Length: 123
Image 1 (cartoon, rainbow, N blue to C red):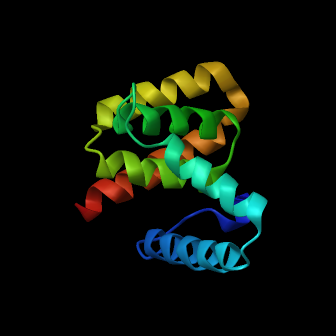
Image 2 (cartoon, rainbow, N blue to C red):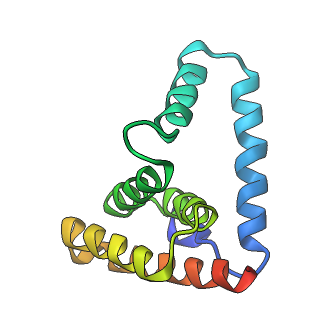
């Protein structure tokens, strides 16, 4: 997600989720075999297996931060919050992403912390 579309404000997380759900339904409704299978693979990847869901969401958060995808970071932060991840666990996870991704990750780190703080405030 570009900086212009960064998730900001109290209603933005709700708007982000609604947009994501609406667009996923439209995309999947086209019944494109490759797209539908890829989305299904993505969903299955984050199910519990040898690794629990919490660990997989933390891995998704690190990968998203390193790849500098604010949409993905926001999604995984919300899922991490749903999985009961603490602020300390989130910061340790972000620290791994920062070390792997380098200083170019810092703007995304700022937005991630802002998003997390807003998620905490909603609780």
